[in-house]
Structure formats: C-alpha cells, structure tokens
Image (cartoon, rainbow, N blue to C red):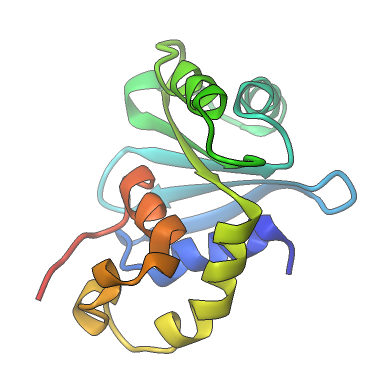
Length: 168
C-alpha cells in the first residue's frame, strides 16, 4: 500500500462524520491520490491530496485536479483541502512553506498534514495495534498522548477537521 492509500486508510479508521468517500484521481506511477469526502448531514466537502511534492506544488496540483475532475463548483466557505505532504525533515524552511500554503486565503480552507519518512514508518508499525479495535480511537486508546510514536497521528487529528474528537 503506498503512503497516500495508507494515510487515507488511517483517516478512515477514526470516527468521522457520516458521509461518502469518492476517489477522484489516482495514479500510482505518478504517486498521486486525490479523493473527496462528503458528510451526509452538512454541506461541507473535504478534498484529500497525497503526492510526493512540496506543499506549494501540491496546492497548484490540487487546483488543476479541482478544475479538471470536479463536476461542481467549489464553494470556498464549505470546501476544505487536506494535503498530505512528506517533508525531508522538520526545519524552519519546511514550516515556512507549510504556513504559506495554509494561510493562502484563496478558494478554500487548506490544511497541510506534513510528515517525515520516520514518522510514517512509526505510524505504520503501530497501525495494526492502534486500529484493530472496535469503536472510537479516543475511547479505545486513552494512553495515546503518552507515546512519542504517535506524532503523525496527533498531527492528523489536528489537521483533518472531520475527525470526531469524542472523549471517554
């Protein structure tokens, strides 16, 4: 399973608002995955993009995909774009690029869920343990905050606004 499919599978294992997933574009050779999630009860749309590019390049790529593949107009206040961006390491330069994308006020709300190769490796090693549970992650795994290997998972919880954050 490539990184993009893995990150989406992790996202889907959280308690989410009831809704429908749709794969919009996928090309494993290009290492691109573009999907949407439409909650049933509200008029919001969540677009997910994973590709092996810098956040600024991903934003341009997302704009092209939206223009080419979405069959409806984007409503800026109701559209969220979540970019899964692998960064070589967490440096001041990386954070500047991420902030530049997230603070870009045009078109829709943007979240960059950045990660390093090591963070992804740690999450992959824990994913079976974490998600072979029934019910909501927060209720089933109350000690998650104490484990350093959950760094990427914490970030996903923060950066993906449709994750239900129910507590015990």
